[in-house]
Length: 341
Ligand code: NAD
Ligand code: TYD
Image 1 (cartoon, helix red, strand yellow):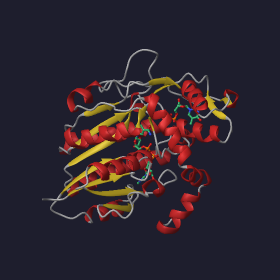
Image 2 (cartoon, helix red, strand yellow):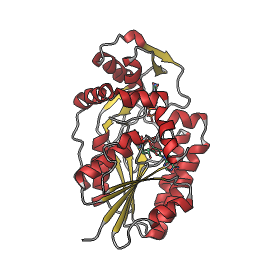
Image 3 (tube, rainbow, N blue to C red):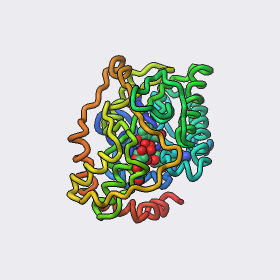
Image 4 (cartoon, protein in one colour):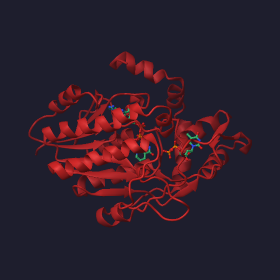
């Protein structure tokens, strides 16, 4: 039987690490090659359970670096099939507001570089993991469908939209076998505590103020990360070339409700909530219509927010070492000593 190698870019990040774990658990015959630059968001602590597995390998690779990418793909045994799940990206909106250029480098230049190397290698399937944020912002009505025009509003979402167009162009021009996914906000284990849910859990735990932007009535459509990862495998195995698939859980909440739930769960007072200056250009509402992936690929979310949010909070409490190493930056020094800064 020929070998299947699945390359995961950004596999040391939040969603990537959850995906690597799912792949090793559910596709034991596949070889997983994790290519990650180890930016501040990439943390090999997330992959301790994968280390030492004979069918898992990590290479520190910046997808912007053509030669490094080529070497990594050249190391894949010939004769089998190679599949790619592309998650590597700069991912935090607030950082993109501070400085947009790293987002253009990683998300736009990096994606084109990867597409070129994958095409030369003869990759059989490529899933480009994008975001619902490329569609811009909704008012109180309606949902994003795959036909909603691209109206990215932040440097982060603009760079993701640009990468989506590069993938589309590779399909159209070269017949490259790619699909694009656009998922709503994820939550779950291993999320870097700069994003809403883990930041609020970490601060509430230490009875530090919980910074809520603007009026707190901004709405996001939350999906448990495991459901997202299962959707990505469905698109990898059953998705059609050139198609876009929205992924979401029909699970909208205003930020303030999420924050209050976390406080209630951790038995901390609402007086910890601190309304702070709004994010510039803050998108009001995201909401996904995921009927296409449900109908065409048979995917549906399995986790209910009522269960998965408390599970997530419990995970951060049970993994206090992980959180402390992230908050202190100790993980960065540790892996820089092994792999270089
Ligand atoms: P993350 O920031 O936690 O992880 C990103 C990973 O990419 C990190 O491990 C980082 O080291 C790596 N990386 C960054 N630049 C790189 C480069 N130049 N070369 C190689 N590796 C690089 O992000 P995440 O939340 O896990 O998101 C993963 C993907 O999913 C992103 O493409 C993001 O746009 C998309 N997405 C995220 C969400 C969400 O809610 N988190 C929702 C929809 C889509
Ligand atoms: P975030 O987790 O950064 O995801 P995104 O901006 O990609 O949706 O933010 C989720 C929502 O929470 C968003 O409306 C901004 C808001 N937010 C706060 O109110 N306070 C915070 O400290 C953070 C990080 C986010």
